[in-house]
Image 1 (tube, protein in one colour):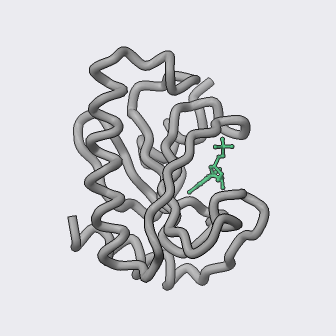
Image 2 (cartoon, rainbow, N blue to C red):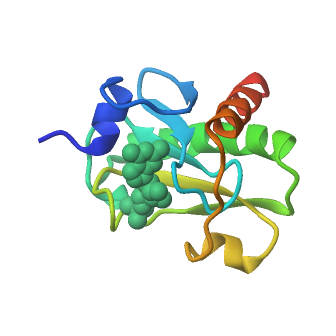
Image 3 (cartoon, rainbow, N blue to C red):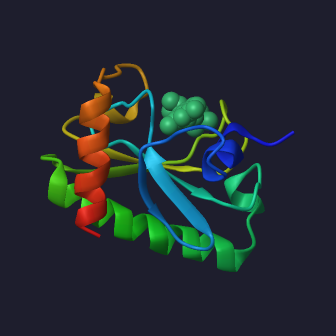
Amino acid sequence: MSSIFTKIINGEIPSYKVAENEKFYAFLDINPNAKGHTLVVPKEEVNKLFDLDEESYNQLMIFSRKIAIAIEKVIPCERIGLSVIGLEVPHVHVHLIPLQKMEDIQFIKKVKLLPEEFEKTAKAIAANL
Ligand code: 5GP
């Protein structure tokens, strides 16, 4: 069965898309730690980060860096944090999270955003790529 992220990539489930190329898809996390929390996913459905081949791993980091630089232009924050977990969705994804304090990377406190705020944030990040 396809992962939820494969369904998002294929457009079967909606997402607030930030960027896409032939290998990767970036979109806003639906339950964000902070406004601008973005997930970067390889289209190839691989479970664990370190199971990616070296080239895909490097390309994922290069693509994630571009997205992180765009997020930082749009969301006021101290810096962008990067985390890879995958305990909920077993399809590789990089979390890019605007940080003000350590709590923001701890997946404890969540922020609620309206659909129009998600929409506006995704468009603003995309416009700064
Ligand atoms: P992890 O697997 O790294 O522990 O967490 C999975 C992340 O994916 C969570 O932050 C969760 O909010 C996010 N997520 C799970 N399902 C969906 C979804 O259907 N759409 C979006 N945009 N994010 C999701």
